[in-house]
Amino acid sequence: MWHFGIVAGAVVLTGCNQEQTASSQARTSVAEVRGSRIESKPVLSNETAKAETDLKNASSKELSTPPAASVAAIVSNPPPPQPASPAREAGDPPTVGFDKLASFTYDMPDESLGKPETVRTNAPTQIPKTVLALDKQRVALSGFMLPLKVEGGLVTELLLMKDQSMCCYGAVPKITEWVSVKMTTKGIKPVMDQPVTLHGQLKVGEIRENGFLVGIYAMDGEKMIGPLDL
Image 1 (cartoon, rainbow, N blue to C red):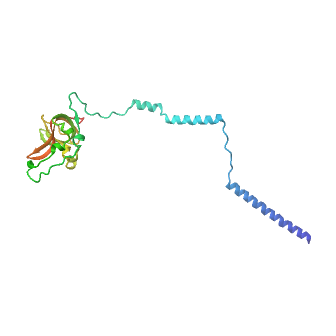
Image 2 (cartoon, rainbow, N blue to C red):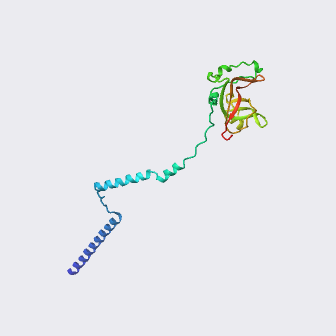
Image 3 (cartoon, helix red, strand yellow):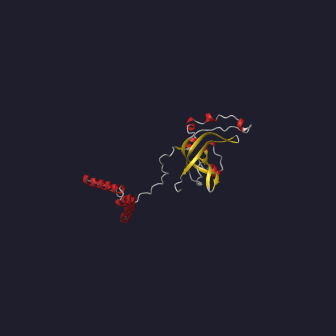
């Protein structure tokens, strides 16, 4: 009987040992699956570190320096030059722009209360002295043409305007934003939608027709310069 007890105990002890071994192997397997080997980074010698730094610097220099072929192509094929403005000639008058002529506010008189000639205005005091100084001076003025009178295909009377607001959109410009021009020659070619430059004698002051104020700038036109394709 005691032999049977010894054998049974041995079997139980052997089973426990096997379960503990299997559990230990499972834990080891899980650890191996979830973990990774930690390897120390090799320490580079001074010569090796210097060689890697030189290699990186050389690569950066090659990327930042354009190939010689590209430089040669740029030099041999430069971008086309921009179109130049009409060249000034000896004796050309000084240039005056609407940035100066329209640089102030001109209050229009109320001429609806009576006869226009009876309405008193303060025109001389509204126009700056720097603009009044241009009266009866030869100038070159650029703007957009609005023909008023055409004879034989040539424009003899026109408005030279600051922009195309009246021509294209019907907007009423300020009285400082146009110049009434009468050509002293047989006329000039009509040019629309392109700025032109007119030479002539500028007149500064109130311009009245039938007593009504119609402008403060006028010009006796001599010739037209531009556009470039004329």
